[in-house]
Length: 173
Image 1 (cartoon, one colour):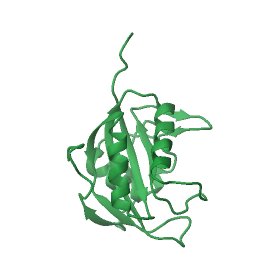
Image 2 (spheres, one colour):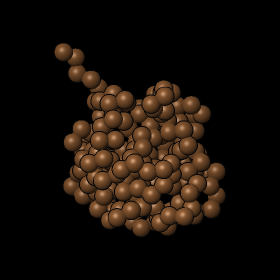
Image 3 (spheres, rainbow, N blue to C red):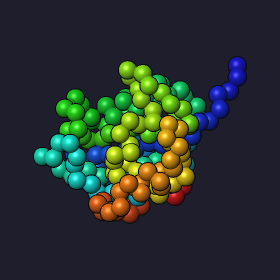
């Protein structure tokens, strides 16, 4: 049986309900069971977008290496979210944890279940700013721009950086 190669991935983490930092740490620990976490960004505080009447969000990004395919990764992430207490809610509503696949190698995937790269990453400073810390030169396979170049569309920093409060033994900073 042939071994699958490790694929580099970038994920975005967000939460605005409960102990958000603890939930994000638990998510990283769970993700570490099937991927090698290579970097964890600082945590950023961001005002909610789209649905404004809810608590502020904490956001971070992680990079890693995985052998599982993109669809299996998505379903595994959904299981982690559920295990950590995320239940059904309305779109863009409050959540205990949200984990999005931003990049899966240099793949472009457009299916009813999964779109990679994440379709709204370019309009979300709360995704790009943490990702820029740990993967500034990763290129969007669709538009060819690096994370840093996409972040240039946000000339004013609107997020508050809370520092490297998620790092532990499972990841290198």
